[in-house]
Amino acid sequence: MNEIEISESVNKQNPVQHSLDTSRIAELRGRVQHAIDKGPLPSIQIALAHNGELALFETFGAADSNTRYNIYSCTKPLVASAIWKLMSEGLIALDRTVAHYIPEFGMHGKQDVTVEQVLCHTAGFPQAELAAPQWWTREDRLKAMRKWRLDWEPGSRMEYHSLSAHWVLVELIERLTDNDFRQYIRTKIIDPLGIKGLRLGVPRDEQGDIAEAVLVGKPPQSDELKDLLGFSINWPNSADQSLLMFNEPEVRALGVPGGGAVATAADVALFYQGLMHNPKKLWSPQILEDAIGRVRVDFPDPITGAPANRGLGVVIAGSGKYLPYRGMGTAVSARSFGHQGAGGQLAWGDPVSGISFCLLTNGLDANPLRSAQLCAAASNRAGACSLGRK
Image (spheres, rainbow, N blue to C red):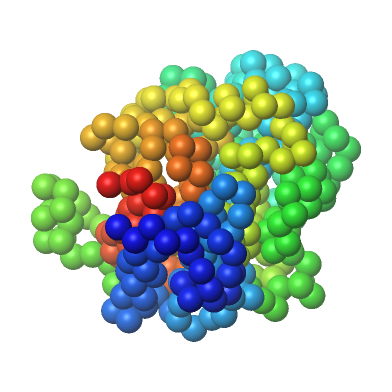
């Protein structure tokens, strides 16, 4: 193990000093370079932060360090953190129903859905639709929410609410603060943390540095899936093109709260440092600790079959045989928390090691197995960068 501190020779973009294992950081950089060399991803950006400061920030492939990426569902903890802020200020309570704050939401049997259930993906409306043209105005979004019906009893199971739940969360923000949700998140969360590039809702004239997402690769073959999973599965033979809508200037400006934020990997890694260190006491320490540190939902995830391990807007690593399913690799502590995003985005923080890590790419790989292997390999190397890790 190489125990010298990170220096400019390892991290040319950020020559700050950190007590991390430079040999492990070299392995991380090498694995990402290998992914670029092997293909099919056009660019990958990674960042590793430690004890409140950026330790590594590098871009590989056809992009540069100023490039921002759509982070897809890595957006969700950012929106959740704004709800934690409202909780810290006594403006919202988890056990209250959403209809208590948004009466019109309670139509069609949704009157008992709680704020906690919306944050934890147990609210019962995972398939509720809210897309263009309804999502362009607040009035039309509310009209759509009124019409939603439950797919199952709230609190009885967990199923990922990919977009629907976070439209409810930002309506709660606007209802309780009388502020545009994008402005509230920026002024109350992003700016106080000193993060420059992270944005939910980017004006058209500020989008020039955002990498365009592209579809790459081919879907996995049935034999490949059977070898990995032990059983056959009918995987779609074409890529999901719906994610390309986040290239549209109007969608970027809207700031879709379930997946529309843009950032550099450094921005996201530093956001997780903010969650671990709570500078300026943006959140009540008790509320923040509970949000990122307590598993509230252990229903099985219907996709993986593993316990969901949902905190209050984040996934918590835990331990044991299901750790690899949580998207943070196997070299993190049980207290680690984070969230993945479509197309291979990932971000997490480990309060034990003090490390946070983010990987972003603009290549939407049609082969989720290859994408998952890269994320796991990168996370394992990042998680092992703390001195003393075996």
